[in-house]
Image (cartoon, rainbow over all chains, first blue to last red; front, side, top):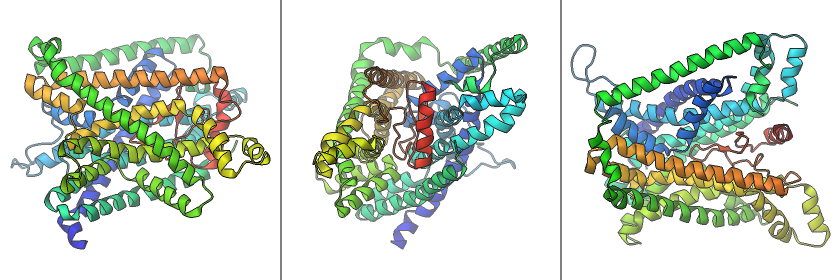
Length: 232
Length: 324
């Protein structure tokens, strides 16, 4: 078993999975927040921009987005998020792996930003209209009512859906195996091809790894959402 | 209720001016973005007729796109039917009085919700290939179906359970008081109501399954993304191929989403889902979004998320009347 973990490099693979998830979560959160702001803005054009992004991306398979990032964004349009040369001018030995990693992060971020946007919007939707009306009627200005009344409740309402997006993101990082990032799904394929006798234990280990990654996350999310829930 | 109603006052003259300025800025931003993309495309000679004319020849459609679409839909259709059947069984087992049955179903559900669909597909595919149980031509299809079914039946099981849990307790009590056994109450009173109310959620889940069937690309199942790659190399039209395939996916899934909205609004009109039955609005997706990433959204544009815990479930329910 230990021997299999070492040969299949499962630990580095899970480390890569975690890295993918963290980077994509950060970028998806930024992009998703921007799109949520567009969708919530009181301006028709901005709403339409945000809404069309969400509709287009949510209905496209992640596999397609990730593969297109590699074959179209890089292959056809020549957008290269990694450099071939190190700062001192010598060739970058990690060029291919860091290129694929970053393309994967781009694909995952684009996809999950749409879900982050919807999570934030659902957080805003949990606020009863009366809260805003009350804030106005006691004379708070617009920024004050946002700061003191609306946004604190919106963030708390968004914890559960955002947490669920994060859990889904951790599992969805496996899709970047399609563009040659050596994470867990890639390693699983390696086991199947080079040590077929160990397919069962390999699968058990990988599955266990994901249970270990997602179970605490789920518990944390439901704990946080209960502790921070707005009592109404 | 849109967020804007909570976030903003009805605009006065100054706010309206500001909105007009923001509109102009928005239009300019969109145009600038379109310009940057177009410029890049032209620069890379992606918009020449030579790259796109394959779309007009029948062979690209008959050789790649239509078979790809057929295979995508076939896998999705088989998977949704199997998941539904399995989910019903799982939900019954999870609500059963027999403890070992309950535990087994719980372990199944929790395990397959945690394991990524792709890992399950890879395992099934290679397991079948190595042991040669089935004709090797069928392995990718079976891999896709098993992966999708394992995950989605776990999710749908939770949807059914949530639906039953949100029925008024009077339904169960009435059933017991006329002398039905607990399992009869579940079979003939609770689950049928939950199922009717979860139709929209079920259709939305078809969108998730259709999208996830694209994972078959990785285990060599000839679905649409595979078609895109083949067209890309056969016609020298990588970018157009992916654009067209994405458009097909978006059309299919957008249509399914609209269908879910229609079914839901029809149910509301008929008032089938009265009394706190899983109004698709409160219908919660098991670990939510454990689903490969799809958050369910209903007609009003609200997002359904995992509401396993009572607190946020109650919050969702309270939110319901306000939204309509």
